[in-house]
Image 1 (cartoon, rainbow, N blue to C red):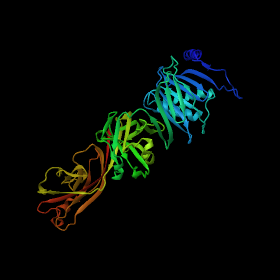
Image 2 (cartoon, one colour):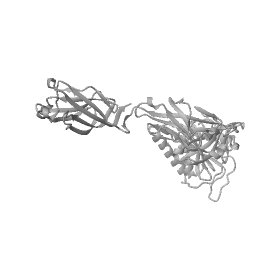
Image 3 (cartoon, rainbow, N blue to C red):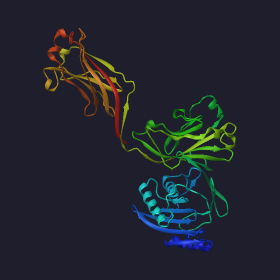
Length: 506
């Protein structure tokens, strides 16, 4: 073994391909060796980054390391086909929370090779093009080595695997011991380091067992059965902070009825207190939800099977799992989830990116709109000397309005007509206000009013609209028509606001 380690360290520095044998080769009828370790190292360029690769090939397993501009190990992921659904399970072994880069590559390599895969990767987060190029080069190399076959069915046996504590300097004696369901990492002294138990993925959900408790929040419930007995449909936790945002856990102890969930507990993470966030906000986060096994002192951990980040925005404040856990399994005392009618849920949420400075708009429709009527009484009408005059300000649909009147006509109708307009008194942050409205000149004698109705989108460039030729001055001044009685004129406005569109750059 010492000779193998020495040879391997030489390979790490030389960039050559080396086959390391611990025992004499045993070849099958096709000439394949069944008990050798093959190591391939190479370097390539992608998107102005230097990418270093190391591939360690065992009979039933592949270890791959991708280094971006450095020799750091990065995060370590294990991926394996799982029975009986022949899906792929992925877990973060070292380096903390799973991200899309290493976990996604590990998952796809299992699909391409049908083998168990260990991937270490230090590619920066949120670098999809770099990740794609690195994966492409890795797959091309594996293809040239004859290790890539598009597999749809798997037969799995998990061998002992040699892992590295650092790369590319030293080979350590850590051994990855595995059987169905559980993956255990030991060091050279057989001391247990960490464990991640894979559970089959269903409906894009990954469930695994973790010794690590939730990082950000725990929800402990005593007398859980009373929630169901008292028909508590939903319970919301207190707010807690993570990643600079406020969050809440939302628990449906008997399933989320609005989504027709039965026989399950539903659990979600909700972004709280969003009113203070700027228009157009978006938050991306890696979310995990937990349920404590009180018997084994570990946690059932549930997350998106692909490691995909949850995307929170104004129309999607919640993410989680409708079928978090079967009620039958939860209530089974042997599972340790509910002990003496006590249980504990938890979550961790890691914000990976956020957007605020984005051009955005929001159209807010008004439910159950109603028109607002404003009556403007103009006394001493014949003595009006100004070109135009305004009514007092009135409110309708959350906006401030006023009537604008030209007693002797506006523009080309000056001297022949009375002109009437509706105007915004104080333009709001909304960039567009959708309305329909009526302006009316009241007949105070026979109620034969003169009225015009229209709809209009008020904007900063078009903040008043009306009719220059509302009524002939000759008709207005005729005492028999009732428009002027005792030199008093009555003008009405009926305004109905049914939508507002805001626009901003944050």
